[in-house]
Structures are given as structure tokens and as C-alpha cells.
Length: 220
Ligand code: SAM
Ligand code: CA
Image (tube, rainbow, N blue to C red; front, top):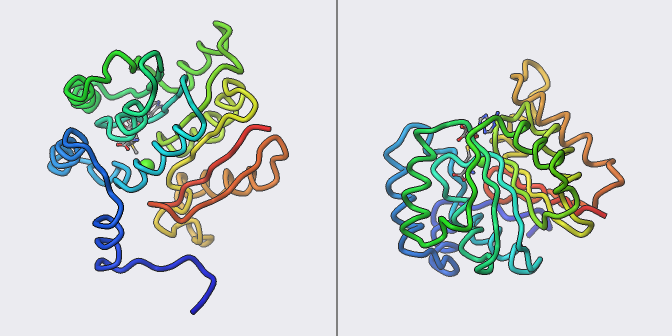
């Protein structure tokens, strides 16, 4: 026994899914559809989606942000638990993959809640700040280009209300954050980001070994 987080082998991971996953039919179809696409490993794991949905429910979130949509799985997890008048601003630059997202959001009946902005995430977030939406969002999920993370984090912090939550994906980067010899640009960005937020007194935080590493940051 150890008090370190448990290592999951395939059998135990499948037990976890069997024992707890309540994935809707549309989410399952989206996952199956995406599995055949280029970049399918970018999609968050289903238990992570369910965890994020639970966080959003605990927060009583109404207004949310997502930076990095791909085929829309994480957005659908969150939008599905938003109230009828809830809203998500979803940022991505890829017309092709987000066309899949839109199709499945429609199928799931949440398309009305999601405002997809096809533009660089930093531009969209800046626009929201400039149009007076600062301090008004309850939840943000950052999962786009890793070199942009720090900037998205600063922008989301401005857009969040006190007590709002930012979830940042891939913070363990399949273990590459340990590479100090010849880290890629993305790895360096994640290393620097992790290092920065640890001492950022504007937030409370927890880094979790969920999926590829998920850091939760609560704006004070
Ligand atoms: N959250 C998604 C899911 O769970 O399925 C996965 C997102 S995927 C890891 C990253 C996405 O970020 C890609 O769809 C990519 O097009 C998008 N992206 C890359 N650079 C971007 C930028 N500058 N602004 C907004 N989105 C960007
Ligand atoms: Ca990710």
C-alpha cells in the first residue's frame, strides 16, 4: 500500500468505467465517431467529462468558457448539465472538426446553449473582456494550443467571477513534463505554466492525475 494516487492498468480502468460511467447515447456516438478521425487522442476521457460535468453542477454554473473544442465532446459534457438559460462560449479555429461538434450538439439538444466562435481563442477572450463580460463566467476549460495556455489562463481569470473555476487539461503531458533535457516548445510551456500557477496567490489550486493531468484553479 502507498498513499500515492493509484496506477490504473487496463483492467482496473475498465472497472472504473463500468462502475461509474453514465455516458449519454449521443456522447457515446460522438466518441465512436471521433475515434475514426485524425487527432482522436485529443478528446478528453469519458470519466473526465463526467467529472467536469459534476464540477459544473456543484458550482451551479450558468456561464462557461471553453478554449479548444475539437469535435465537441468536453463541451457537450458541460453543456448537457447547464440550465436551460445556461451559455457556453466555445473557441476553436478548426472549421472541419467543429462541424462534427455542431452536428452532435444539435443531436443532443444543446446547440442553443453553445456559442461557437471560430477564431483564435485569445482574440475571442479579449473581445469578451472588451465588451464588458469580465467577472461574469462561472467555469472555463482550457484545452487548446499549449503555448497559449498562460495567456488563456490570464484572460479566463479576468472573465471569471470570484469563486469561479478554471480547469486546465494535459498538465502532465503524458509524463513529458519530466523532460528537462530536450523539451519541446509545448512541454516547456506546460512546465512553465505549472510552475507559475503553483505560486499564484490569486487562486486556490489542485493538480489531479485525471486523464493526462488536470489542474483546477479557483479564483479567490
Ligand atoms: N476539448 C476537446 C475534447 O475534449 O474533445 C479537445 C480539444 S483539442 C486537444 C485542441 C483544440 O484546440 C483543437 O481542436 C484545435 O483546433 C484548437 N486550437 C488550436 N489552436 C487554437 C487557438 N489558437 N485558438 C483556439 N483553438 C485552438
Ligand atoms: Ca486535452
